[in-house]
Length: 410
Image (cartoon, rainbow, N blue to C red; front, top):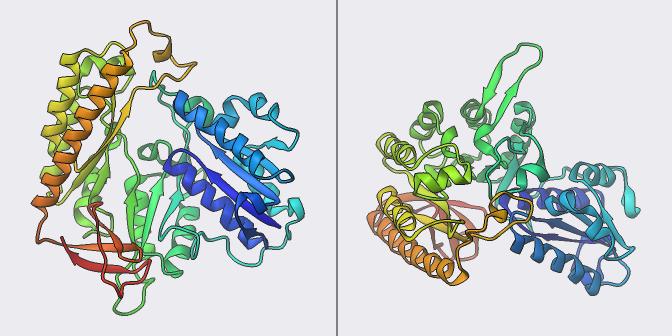
């Protein structure tokens, strides 16, 4: 059986799509282009109105690319609006992610029910830095977001299962494992028998200990990276792990700001104000001087004034972000923000987005210059390209192999 996976959206979706693909591989399926596939899986996104349009376009594209394949639509958009996709074509099936995973294991669509090997997303066709999903869902309800509806309440994966997956990946030679979740910092597992709770910092300590010896002589041990952590979840114990792990937990955090104005943050229903965010960042830099900090910022949120946007630019400068992901506000129907009558005009949003990108480029150049002539470990992502601990892309030596960890000078 031949298959193709089409992925849209966030890093968690990417990890889930890789998991579907590796499970299909393990059950004897062969990856191919959508035009030749018997089965096409479209993992959807619905975080903004624009993302939902791209999702519908992707499903229609899969149907046009192949007139015989079964097209499985899964993910957030499918959870929100199942009927829209079912109405597109009789070949469309809408499935939850757990249902899809179970059907693969059961040998649906002509698959061999007996696995031919471990379902590891490692090797040709997969990323060298491998993601492991340890958390799903979100208990927050930001006024611009519908993901908490699509994903449901926050849940966490048993730490023993996380350790098992990470040990298997490290044993297979993976040098960087990226822990992912919809609200990763909320990770919390409680043992039903002992009542003992495991938080994100505890999980990291377990992973460091359990993978410390899973490397060959002369090679660097596997390291871990946190995909994104909300400001409210940056506690002292997490900072302590970052500060003391010697780089085995990457001294890089993606810390979403969204706005540098406290009024806008309140209207977004974000659980912090601008001053609190700046205090968190100051504490991080004091405790972890090598830290590289990236962020997400929404510009043109309904009602945002020029002065409020200027506050965001000021906070971004203060926080010295090494990378800013800029998102011009996009209405998502069904959210409180989309119903507001004080929407910012498109031209104003575009202007603010460009100014923020320009600042982001300047701050990134400044951070890279500040790290000039320093040494860092980097993972080779593909021939000639490596990614440093601080999340900078750098040239890799010609003889460096994909997946290898090397020491480089910035």
